[in-house]
Image 1 (tube, rainbow, N blue to C red):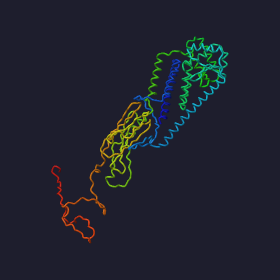
Image 2: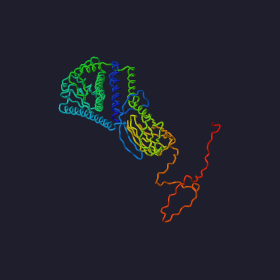
Image 3: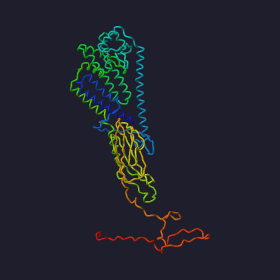
Image 4: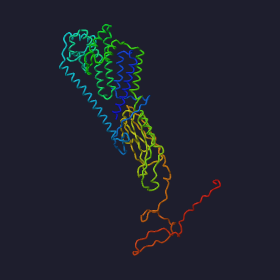
Length: 539
């Protein structure tokens, strides 16, 4: 199934990108600016967001993969056509695919319901405990908006039960302040408001909404949940870095003390962007260290980050390290291996009927861009005058192919069967019965469309003569069974002596059947057959 294959391949790519980003940050721990450190995570977000892997046309690494295939038989026209998956346990494989899809959708529904429930609780809390700020707080808020470069109107509420300033994660976010901050001095209020307004100006609330959606879709991948915490931490550090960008050393110190004070409260719910998001000591240390980090990154470090991004884009966004390449090679090798001829025990009618065609180099196969066509031939049971040509098309390209058609002009003019489509991992078998012609070379051409581009591949099937050409020679006539009237050749005048034909009377009964001359009768006149004699040259 294409959905299961996509979930598996993108999950593996996400693990590779996550490990690459974490390793890069560890190696260049104190040399990356907070903004660049946070920006690297958009590689992972893009990979999780885009389920399509671009066809590269080249492959650096081959990774093993077990393709999930689908079994849907059907018949169309005069040719028997079948879509098949793995050759055994079709029903069990189909059930397993359905179970995977149902479990995944159920997990998505549960995580989404959990997030919607907490969003509803947050909305209810604001309706119950939210109050408008007084004139002093409103004046400071307007000054901070002008300083942060925010012109849009943003609702602000003082909320009872909240322990840190926060920005709601919604399309129209609200700025929230704890109710006990109403008595805080102007400096603390200014730092808190500048931090949340910087989140608003950077559209961090939209990024949080997107990451929450990705967590619901990829709920089964632990890397997504680990990356979520790191993304939020790096987001907060980058926000702190922009807030203190124009502050002097003493003002940075007061801002750091304000952040530490906020960390003394309870952890902010995950549906908020809080100034003190996370309650662990490690997160607090990272935030304080980020405040004093350098704002600019050296050119060499930037080039290293660009190189890392380029490698990740090629390796994890294209088929350069595709999971399906090993499957394609295995399929191609299997297609090129001749299948053993099946034998059936049946009563022999005569020597000619007991001889079956023995092809020497069947089947044949060709592969183009992960799509293969295999050709084979087999005799038709109890009908030696006809043969059955079998064409199998298999798609292991990682994408759906459309407008597929097979043409074999040697056995049929025009297209064989209807135009069809195949999802990744599907097979289609087409059988065509026609008059026997040997020897013959059949060139089967498969034409298909992938990513809007028309492609084709051709397989040539050479059917040799039967083994033992005596099957085509004339066999001696067998005497007709007794008492069975059979057509006999008309004798000539030279074969029998001229004799009067008796004319029976009414009392003599039926006319007797003429019989051949007795043994002592004169033999039919035959031309003399020369007897070959060896010559001196032969001797």
